[in-house]
Length: 87
Image (tube, rainbow, N blue to C red):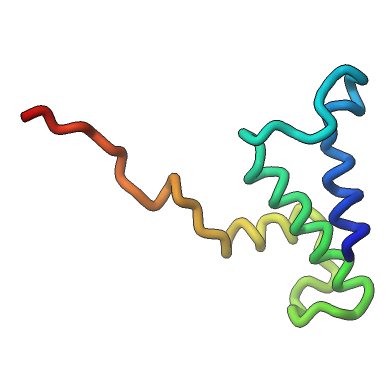
């Protein structure tokens, strides 16, 4: 499963398209990168028989990502915009 996570992260490396680019994706992409890595690890856990979530069996990567998204809390969508009050 660890290898699946590493391979998923490696597949998103900007250096694959540009040898001068960063090895890791930009921090601004952390949510999408984390989602992709988590889905790859979840899929591998199913393939290896370690998953405790039977519903994942037979799901595509896209379906697993959607399932993870639906159970993930997002700070940005949970709070109202901050506005300074001038006194």
